[in-house]
Length: 266
Image (cartoon, rainbow, N blue to C red; front, side, top):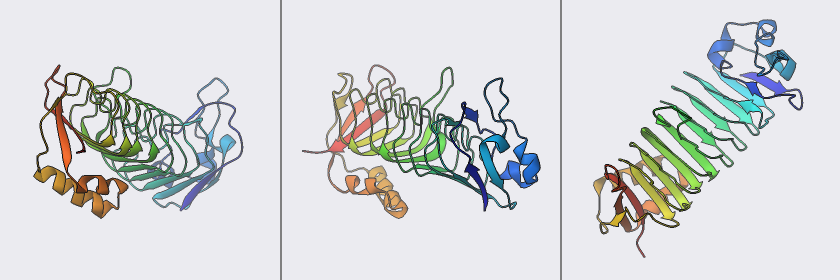
């Protein structure tokens, strides 16, 4: 297991896009220390910010977190990265495979563009987790994102496929959703599913619902039962939400209208 130990407070935001187990496996510690990670003219290197211990394995632990650690695990294609602390924006951006775990909280746009693997945030996530960055065609695109705490606004915005699990979420969860599944064990904020075309939202409760969502009863769908079984195998807290009768709403009828929102029937 290779380790990067944060030396102290960072003087600027850093970009860890290319800091993966695969990228570090062919380097000596001295060579790794020369990798540029700074985002200003100062020219910060990996060795400036971290104490480096490499063993060539496919497992990397970052000891110490900071909200200035951006794009941690971005482009991860194999192996695992674990961060002991918080991270900044775009956690796991474009990740294709592997396991990425953060013991603290994450900034905005976690898992944006991620196509595979599993990203777990033990704390909270900022706005647009699993959502699309400016001018991008899609947000989460096939990966699994687990947020054990609360997610901010715009959870899964323009999500194309994959699975998002969260404890709670802010306003506009599932906005402009193309497809995929979002399950929130607690409450959603106002206007869930705004502009969604397809996909599934399941939540314990929700705020103000758009008038372009219509109630369609309490169907017993095979998909929901299969999803419940999958979540049980994952040990997800959200599995219990799918055990009872769920009320279904269809929308957003202002767009394609093939999305759906499920909440427990009263």
